[in-house]
Each structure stands twice: as structure tokens, then as C-alpha cells.
Amino acid sequence: MGYIKEPTGVDFFVDPKPLTAAERKRISEIIAYYKATGRKMPIKKTIAKERTSGKRNRKVLV
Image (cartoon, rainbow, N blue to C red; front, side, top):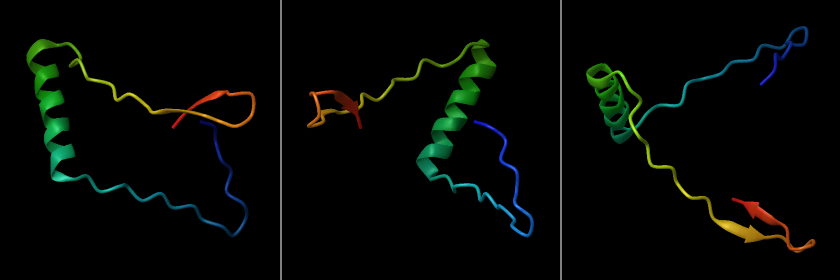
């Protein structure tokens, strides 16, 4: 991600996304695991659905 220069007279504001209770709990578990072991917690990755586009049957991850 690169640097974005603000145009004259325009202000960019980025508001943080509020976390749900489940997300806060998961983050706390990850931090506690790291403090206890000194290693990153193994996190299960979600599998993206595959779909094919009409052009040349290219696979696109959604």
C-alpha cells in the first residue's frame, strides 16, 4: 500500500472498524498464546470459493 497525498482542501479520515465480542475474544486468545509460548498461534485459514468466469474459463477466487 502506498502513500496517498491529500489534495488541497480535502481531509481523509479513516475510522476504525468496531470489533465484535467474538473477535475481541479471539485476539485475546492469540495474544495470551504468544505470551505463554513465544510462538505464533496456528490459525486455520478459510478456503475461498472458486468460480469460473465466462472468459476462457479462468478461475477467480471470491
